[in-house]
Amino acid sequence: MTMTLPPLTPAEPLVIGHHWRGYRCASRLVHSHSPEPRLAPVVLIGGAFQTKESWGRIERGLVEHADLLTVDLPGWGAGEPLPERYGADFMADALCHMLDEVGLPRVNVLAGSYGTAVAYLLAQRRPERVAKMVLAGTMTSIPPTARAAMQRTVDLLTAGRVAEFADATAALLVNQERIGAVTRGSRVHRFLIRRMTSLAPDEIEQHLTNTRRLLQHQMLDPSQAPTAPVLVTTGEHDIFTTPDLCRELAATCADSWFAKVAEADHMLLLERPDELVDLILRFLHGRPLAGLPYCRSVERVSPTPALVAGPRWRG
Image (cartoon, rainbow, N blue to C red; front, side, top):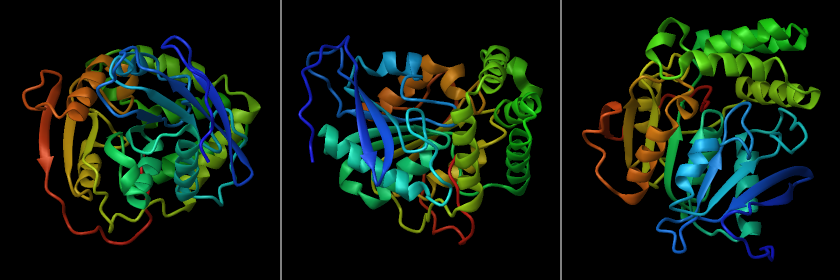
């Protein structure tokens, strides 16, 4: 059922409350600064510690070209914690419900890290709803070393050892051995530590349930390739969703590109936001991706057969 939404000016974001199967979620609709947007609306799905209000320079760059919908899915931001028995499919269905209520039948999708699982599943389950998709920092399965490190962050936070939790989580997301080679690397690291040591009680519970969800569920089945054109990207120094893991995910899609961004790691959205906006817009507009000065490499990825079945996860 589509809501009747009040008219908006470009300066007036509209926050919309939704419910999906008893759980709260919310969206934030921002109309483009352009009187005639040249792209289909773009839906932005964040990763850990990211809410519908926290897209910053990414939002400011994209809104010149398209209407934007940023979302707090169930278990995120404005919503209460979502029990870990619900998988990413639940969140993908919630997102589709939110798009229905806002009245967006077909969208482009930008997702980062944790949010890439939801985007991938939406493109699989409802291919008619996704025009193009950009996935930043993703993978098909959690390597054993990362799985152990993620479990340690859960254990530390559960024990109330917040400072140690912050350090351990930052060590997953920021390549501290290459921090001097990453644009804004030290600033982003300090920001993460401040953010993670100031989590409110409801944010702590959200993060615990969301991380346990990743560790417990088969998050996706890549044997059914999404048909929408896909751009997968991450920083060249990403030690969590490494370039090889991202490229492996790109190879599960029928029509995909992979771009490795220079002087960045997993926190690409914070480290090189202007360059990422340029990359996204080139892809969505169908412009050439070759020869970009901020990319170490850009390649067309040939699809490969479905990966061996096993625990699956995306970013």
